Length: 159
Image (cartoon, rainbow, N blue to C red; front, side, top):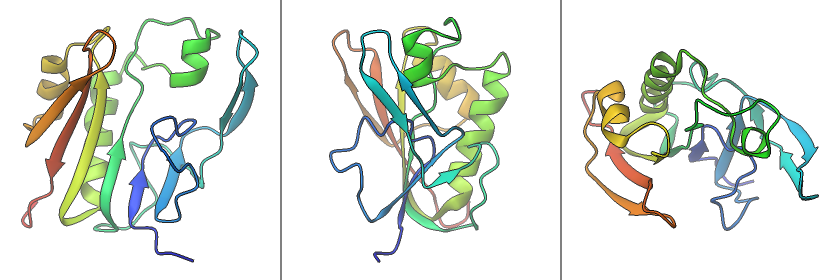
């Protein structure tokens, strides 16, 4: 078995992965469930480890790469297909996102890379960056309306 050198800290249904069974990736999420969405599609959230991204059960400096793609929406009905598919931020979202970012950095090895994906449909990127308190090295905007941001951070040796 390949060593798990990559962590997806909130994998959901692994939508961004080309290989949803990549042997190098440890898939983690706070939930494990199967659901049928309103359009009849099956949603499967099947992480390797069920864990809260604000308090992960992994040792310091465990991964070379971490993907952090947390929920982005704070205003969704709990039973909507978007809530089922992407999750919903709690009223404590600022504290939660900061704790999650800090945990992702903790489990990264020195000079490891953190990729953070954020959609600013409800919370602007500037607010997110204020919450995490760290500027990315670089990023890319994508999506139909240019509201999805892929940001790259590096854990410095002395972090």
